[in-house]
Length: 275
Image (cartoon, rainbow, N blue to C red):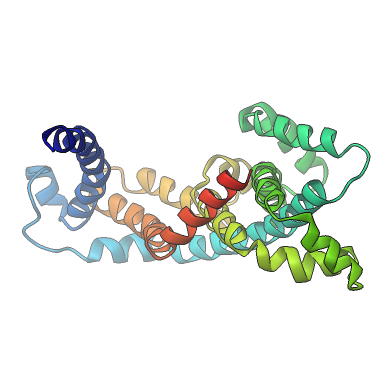
């Protein structure tokens, strides 16, 4: 019993330290965002004595955060929808259909996952510029899809590989074509993985700053992450307002994760075990 308790503490103490190290920066940012500029200068580490909600109002109104929110929602929703549709179809094809070159296609998809975005950054911007897609939502969506699609295809292929082929063969015998099997069988069975990938890709798109900064060059087309980074230059001596803007950006992510954390864990675990 003593050895078991000692083993639990050996694992518990580092986990507690990791949890504190993760939570403390967020609590520190919330505390600073509620301070006045004067109180921040006088006492940066102490708890706030007066709640300044006006910092959030300034960050939202004066920095035009509402427009940035709408831009991010448009880019994220459309990109994630396209990624899930293409990844689901590709995962079904690579896991259940036999065609010449399927193995090569899968290996190429794996290879693209190894290439950092910084390597293809200049060619991608050149291609989008030649196509007239710079500083536009179609260009940003194309960049997001090309960046996040390979991993989603790999994940969906691994998930669908765990579905017995007898199910799809029985559906084909019942008169369903390829689209019928995909829509009636694969999509419902792949719902946990699709939900997990949808949430993760939404977080990736929402958190992105490099791709959006390169493509969306005009201030009116900025995404929320680019907009909040611009707050640092807009309020160089007003850190509470800057941190209030960061809290406004991070809050939706925290809410989404709290609501869907079980679905994320279940889907990712299922995809890992079925691969």
